[in-house]
Length: 226
Image 1: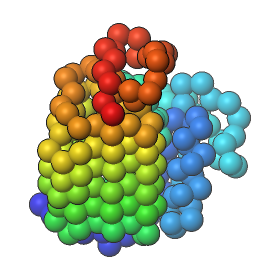
Image 2: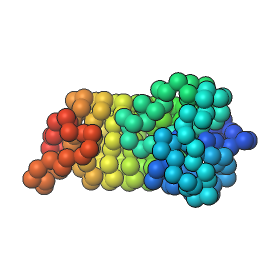
Image 3: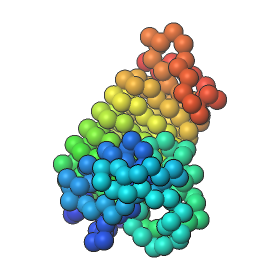
Image 4: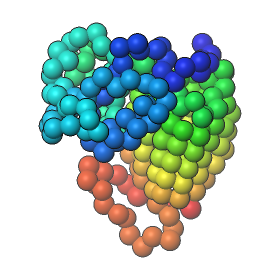
């Protein structure tokens, strides 16, 4: 069904949302949510450490199956999908967030828990569950982005692009029309991807002399994409 952005949080949450994850991205989302008029009622994390911007951080287990409105702040796609599967979160409701400054077509389909940050432009796209678009992202016609994938600031996806599950598209990357990117892929910053990427690969610039190793991504095969 087409989705129209009437309020920042869909469906609305009068009691506010609990943020799942108290790391650096939680700070980003608190600031964006609060300036958009969304109430943050608390934060939960595996390693509570005092307060984050005035909000007390409790253990994730404290939700204990309660039917609350929650929002994943974890930017690492693999970690986010693992946390989402925990039994203590099975009854949570996962509203979608669309920043008021973004342009989102009424023909777009937005999955549960998706985040569309400031100044994004989306046409007739399909976003899966817990997809994160940070800011200044442009997604062309018929783009599909599957569950738990993350699009960093200023990345652009041209028409008919397909992004698999748990992908990370880094800042300033550009995906050319019709390209399909498989599951668990990474696209490095400012890279231009002109050809399909198999599952579990990482696209780097031809200007790099070696692959940069990232924790948790050591098994990814590197391919030159620019």
